[in-house]
Image (tube, rainbow, N blue to C red; front, side, top):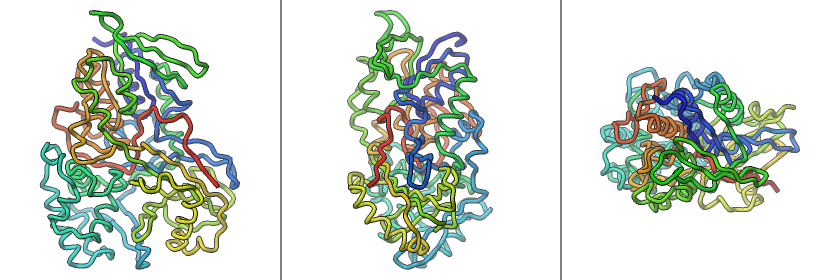
Length: 494
């Protein structure tokens, strides 16, 4: 019986909010701590006084897929599903800047994998021979099991080369999708994680990869709507409050004590029957009590990967589509965020999402401006006649965990050796890459572990705990939304 038991969730990203909601739904008395002034972690928004007016800016561009059943549960749970609609059918415009050709990845209603056969057959960015070899590689990938431990230590890039994929195939298809979902190029990706993304998102269910794009700022979803849902559920939320230490309540006893510091520097001690650490791996390592994990040092061996976001506001519309992907240019994905940001007056606000950005993450804003504005004019000729009203960048240097070969062996499950202490975060052993889906799944798994291992129900069925057989699901172009990042987004402008 869990009714009346107390729980402390440390971290107000998607993992922590999901855990808190699930625990409250199970009858726990829940307190949620977040070090920032808002919920949402790395999937949040901030306000900017721009020369173009007052804007609401997402710290990074996040989308999800129809197969993201846990994140869809989250949207339903906070009453926000209508604010992040999903495409009727997958349709991704792909523009080759070098050749000036526009193609698309568009599915039909046929069963998988035939639903993409027409798109591949007419894909102009690959030759006929390359399309044939890509189809054979996709069929071979479809036969792999993402839960096979042997795949984790292998490189996706090596596997692709062994299956006839050349540099053009990687750039025009595999990395086009993989960099956005995994935040790394094929060479640096665990084959197990790549199989999870491609097999589930593109090769199993014809509707799985239909894209969901928020029509409002992320803060409206993950802070405002989520905060209201937490309040209705009876969760006590303490913002701008950081946990300094977590220890057992007493020798040989049960329960936990957490030393916390609020925004005014006041120290306090909170007690709870159970604790969920829903913060990044390094912060988790610092909070773990001795003996909680057999090898806590492995958390520090889970690397991180950056994402750069370039924000450009023009004085007139230059893009007619909601988004597109690009080839033959440094630009990766471009999104129209005019309406969600609140821009009025006839201008247009474009957000460029640049994943696997290790070589660019520390470049000065002026250098990034000189690099990307000409590329946008090359991709979008109307931009050459437009006036740039604002240009700024946001940098998430530790946006996701690095999905390198062998990383799954380092990712812990929700349970620790310490009774009542559990872990959550997109970096934990969900089987997914660092996505919003992975974060929500981890929170639901941790809540289930606290409550005795009962599975949490989502629109696509139960979210099972690591160690059980996880159904295959794909990923989204998202960043790690775990809590604990710096309290203010890293926003820069000339």
